Length: 246
Image (cartoon, rainbow, N blue to C red; front, side, top):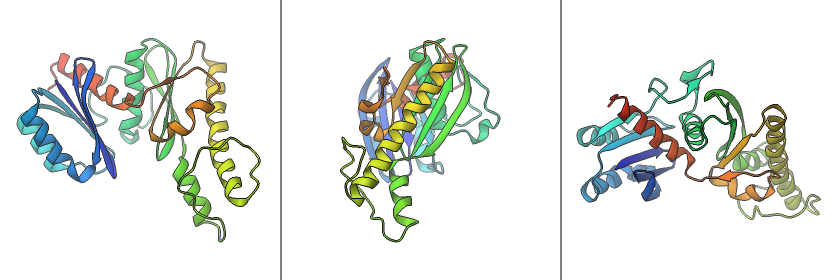
């Protein structure tokens, strides 16, 4: 069994894979991950682990993992099963890299666009030679709403009710919703169309917590995979185990 930890600013995803199947999954407050790890070690026959974090590494969590399991602490120097053509790999978000590796594993030797709608919206492309080329990053849903409220005097902050079915907003609240929701939808479809014009047989993967507001607005066939990054981390862990790197 493999233990996969994707640590975020406020919340973390923790999963246990047995071969290709998730047998445990939890979204938890990041401050509680050590307790969860210790419990899993007592109740599951876990052999290997991979730890990935977008914040400063949790040294206590890493110590628990290293003392009990064959562990990979994921960073840009860890070997991966794709070629990276990014000019500054040391600045590449580990979640972006894990996402394209997961997608490439599911559809090897295909042109793939991965769209991850979270705090930021990330567009990442890997070609049919398994070469990661890079992509784009734009503000996510909450950032846009907060920016409109912060940098103006009278526009309100919208926190919920993101499901809309109109373009023309008939009041300020609806106009804000239309601008942000439809703006992101047009952006996503625009990026997809751009890549489809350049690369034949393009596969499109969508993931991230905010994708639920946009997946039905995408005018192309997509593969929705909420656990794509976890799967990519699992692929990286198995790859390094096969290479005897842990």
